[in-house]
Amino acid sequence: MKGLVNQWGYLQVLMCCTVTFTFWFSITDAFILPSSPSSLTLRQMNSFQQTSKTSMMAPKKHLETDQPFMEPLVSTEWLEDHLGDEDLVIIDVRGEVAKTGGFDEYGAINHEYRGLYNDYLESHIPGAIYVDWTKDIAGPDAAGVPAQLLPFEQFVTAMEERGVGEGKRVAVYDGGRLIWATRLWWALRTYGFDAVGVLDGGWAKWAAEGRPTAGGAEAPCPPKAHARWPAGAAPRPALYAAAEDVVSRRLAPARFAPGGQDDPSLPQLVDARDARQWSGRERRARRGGRVPGALSLPYRALLAQRGEGDVLVMQKPLELRSTLEYLGVDPARPGIVYCNGGVASTLVLFALHLLGQDEGWSNYDGSWNEWGNLEDAAKFPVEADEEPEGEGGERIVYTMI
Image (cartoon, rainbow, N blue to C red; front, top):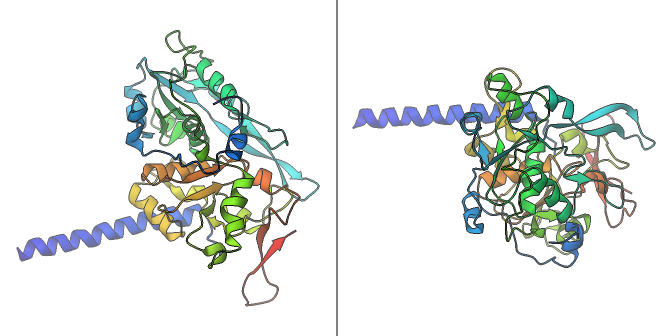
């Protein structure tokens, strides 16, 4: 018995060391920690559904909607084994945000949103249908904010034309950073479609493993084309947040909360951009910085490098919990996540979903593309860091007007 106890103690130490090393590798590699149902858009729906209690469901519960079950995260092995499934629609949503050089009139870095259709034509997973994330599922809104989720009817039409609908399952992949795949995952679930899974590691992992590929364009085969949206699959406005929601749910109540922006009764604000953008040192809008009180959780911190090369996969559940705890994010509390264009932020929601703790969380679709360019600084304030001059001293936090 004593020998068994000693062996168990050794195993506990070994497990602890292994988890700690994996977690520390993921964190340090990811970022530098900072010091401190109609054509109505979801923005319009939220204007009269502020009190909606609808929330993202745990992974197993979409069976209640009579939609086929689909694991939210699928492996390359699983997908290769199911390439011939008639009820499976595979979507390639590879994309990028390309820095185009120079700066705009406000000093923000010039960049461009792109779909990678040529990459798809060159090589893709057999049977995969291409979706351009910049125009097939999103586009500029009336105010010119780019890459905003299309209204329900337009989005559903685009998906039905690609075979997504009643009785179908969807496997979606991107180049390997997962954020474009989770963006489509979030969009589908926001509009009531639950049978969707994200390919872990994306195209990078699939190609690195030497799995089957195809070239040229593919159209939905007859059994998949012109699908009908699942009966009863309706928009879930609670998964979507607009700038007004950030103000009404977080900033306005914080003025009267005993703990101010840090009051635990308030929804959390989570910034999924990198630490340089969170701090204000790098700008992609007229104003730099963050929404006051927002926690820094760079999306890359939720990914882990496995094996050789540049293949990234989702962290394991224990690692995800450790990352969230380390950065001060409490999954048990509701929250709003944002980034630059409402894309990287969806990876945070996806991680919470994998943990079964995404209830009460929403994605601010306009994100910094909107907030960083709003002119009413009193209503939509910005907080940023400034390095103090000279040696020593604390970092100064100020509000940009």
